[in-house]
Length: 194
Image 1 (cartoon, one colour):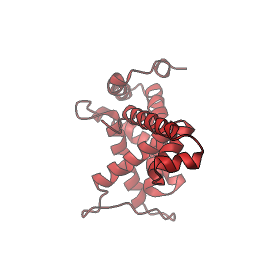
Image 2: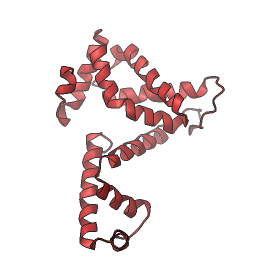
Image 3: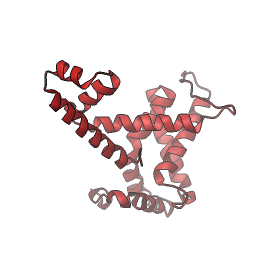
Image 4: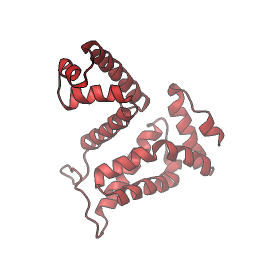
């Protein structure tokens, strides 16, 4: 196991740690830093590709193409201009658009476009946030996730949730409170919320 994956940085040092990883890639030390970045981001990039292109094979290509482009463009990264996460997802977005436009026998889902024919920033950011929320929801306990899904997705009141689950309303309120707190923490950890 590498020293990088053994000692993950504290949340406040995450940006600096990832910038250092990308600096190492730019300096020629590609294997260990790219493996670490791949471990952190491949699943989210795959989800982005799947959401944008609606094809599992092409979503895998988005991940692969993103890391090839990251490897090639690492020297252009400037930590004062943004985070590695932003840099990586910008590359992934361009890779998805390029893969969508390529001549292929596979039909791809339509990407929302603005007047110039490019994916709008608002649509892209909404899609990224939706993916981050989905991943954060997966991190919750089953009871917490169920409480939030019934409350927000099914639009049930806490009393209706209590009746449906057969638990006291106080339990539903407690689960909802702690679920929202855990969700917010998970999203902040993923930088989806400030």
